[in-house]
Length: 360
Image 1 (cartoon, rainbow, N blue to C red):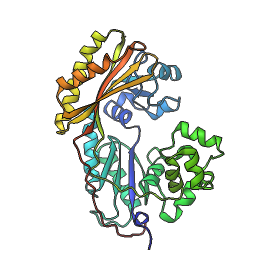
Image 2: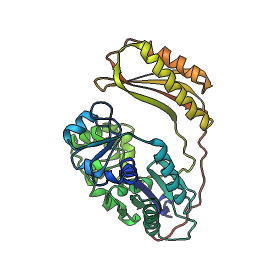
Image 3: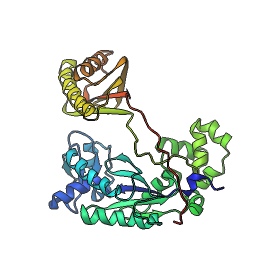
Image 4: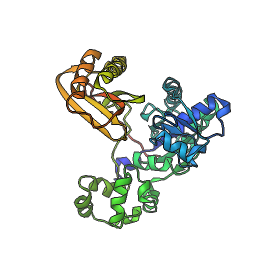
């Protein structure tokens, strides 16, 4: 009997340069121009870059200074997360017209299990095409999609024909698709791991597949078993519509670096207030408070404390963050502070779904 995961039909939808595309849609003067959302040429970090900016090597998480250096014509736009959230909700509403099995990963991407769908359409590829067309016609943005029998392959495939394209990898073509893939294209294999694999002579999926499970576990620890499975198209993870975040956070980047803890206390109070609003909106509380400190040299430090009880109150959040702030001396001046709450009072409820087999 064929394993259940091979019978699934999963779509991964990924919006194209979402934040930047929304800004270009709302402001026609920005269309066709290189823009960066977030930061500035003096302060901050790029949250998203338009495709025009990406041609110059501008990427998310890049400092505004470096981005401007690589693209002198770059236009910086302040992020409008309320607007992005509003559009994301409209996109998800479209998804749910096809299936209730929708697992959002962020505002701009989600998995959909359409094995059994509300439209009665046996073709996941046609469903993805229809959803992308609706997003464009009803909202004005483009999206890319990957279609396969596992979340892992669908995620990898959605990046294959970006922007505004899609890629279907049927179950019987999965292994050949992965064997030909550059190892750095594997979702979950970051730059550091890819470099390590290169040192072991692993450059493609075929190279990875040639290594035994024992070899991979010896050199890559617990992840070795994961790598051994995924390159063979084995991935059991289901689409989880009730996926709950493991932590909730709020942070702020300052216009000028801060050197005094006294000034930082005032900032932490405001961050604590914002975090409380987010927690109460979703009726969430937690036990572990983490203070995030990003220094002027862009290094990041975290300090955590776990309380014996659940909290969501801004006062308790601030007092705990303040205690963590004074836990040890600061290394440099500070450009960003953040507070996150984890060890939450939420439970992940597993959804049991009966999967039927259809042709792709």
